[in-house]
Amino acid sequence: MQVCGVQLSSATSRWRESWPPFGGSYECAGHSCCISGSQRPLCRVQCCQVPRSTGNVAHLQKEDKYSCVDRSTSYLHVQTLRNFPIEKLYGEVVLVRLDSVLLLDPLGLSSCSLKRTLSTIKYLYKAGGKVLLVTSWDPVLQSVNPVLKSTESFADYMSSLLQVKVIPVNGVPCLTSCKKEERVQNDIILFENLLNFRGENANCNDFSQKLASGAAIFVNDSFSLSHKIRASTVGITRFCYASLAGFHFEEELMQLLKINDTTRRPYIAIIGGSNFLRKAPALHLLASQCDGLFLVGKLSFQIMNGLGIPVSSCLIEKNATKEVLQLIEIAHNRNIPIYYPTDLWCLNSNNNEQLEIFDSAELLSGLISLGWTPVDIGPSTLERISSLLSSYKKILWIGPTSFDLTEEFSVGATQLGQILNKASHNSCDIILVGGAACKAVKGMSDSSSQYTASENESIVWEFLKGRILPGIAALDKEMVCFYSKWLETGKA
Image (tube, rainbow, N blue to C red):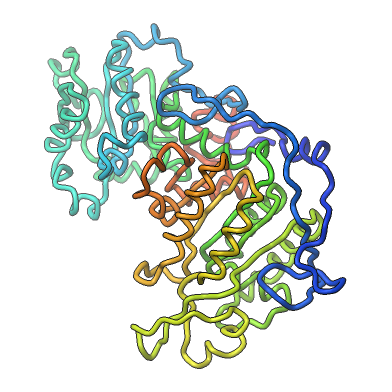
């Protein structure tokens, strides 16, 4: 299967041939099986106990100081700076696309992502390349970061990070905008904010060509824009003879691929958030790859409704019924369990300070009409998750546990983070996706080496849906012709 310009081996098909058959009914009431989370006999989906793997799977080895993924197991067509001949960088003009949010990471130099990005720049500089830097930042980011007040102040900030002089250049970001002396000097050049030019977001061909003028090599180290079409990430690749993934971009791509790696089993996904219809293709894929699903947030209400459990109409996505039933069918056919919350923290709409815990069935059967609104998963649900995770060797957590975007009442995420932290010390692979998941473990000691973490939730959802990620496809020479045609016709 080929997704996003990255060829993936079909691990799922291999697993189906070698994995022992499922056996043993789970939470049976008499002879009737129950979906976990409900005490009532339900025969629509049979839940079976997931057996433990009998095979010994070696841990992925670290290739470099900041990496936790073995690249030898991935089949990539994406060209990387790591594999590009270093001697071909000498004397060449190299344009590097950076992520300003990452550069302003409050963790500073303790952030491995920031270190990898700085390593990309230093590597090119020390190899003798003429390095040009481009990035973008919106007014909101600028308002909370004084260093973004001007190109000059940002250049000073970059100079302090790199310990190399960075020269600011305003105007259209291209080599011809530089003064003659700036071109011949061995200093790094930082161009003006790309969002000051309409051609950036429009992926304008003329702007892309100007951006690439004078540059022979393009290096993309802004993985957070992989799902968007921008002149500085997609259009520019048409005009450079080599388009490469920087060290940070490459590592993030490896982490993305790890989600589809099914060598560590049993594998469970804890999935939160809302909008079932929009995420349906991704949810169906996870159901076909994982050995168990635990849905939280508003997604859990859709599953409960699909299983015949009474759910208030105000919590149901009526246009997603077909997709919900398809997910249940996939789980049934693969004999894997689907879990959902057994209890919920609820807020009284008449008194915003009144929080209470209710059984899920009790809440959904009538308490909502009395003014109670679910805000997060309860302690019994967390205990259930904790007991379940001991049976799994790989855990994906994507999306918030809460039922609302308000963090004020979100208590489940922190406690789930503690549960996963404990699981990580039992040789369990943990993958965290999204701000809620990453934030939940951010403050824990020695957690940085225990997790695969990505805050780029939108990119992961698009990847799981099987969509082409433009920023990745643009670095894959085998997909350039295909993708260019797709841009022109709007058809893949």
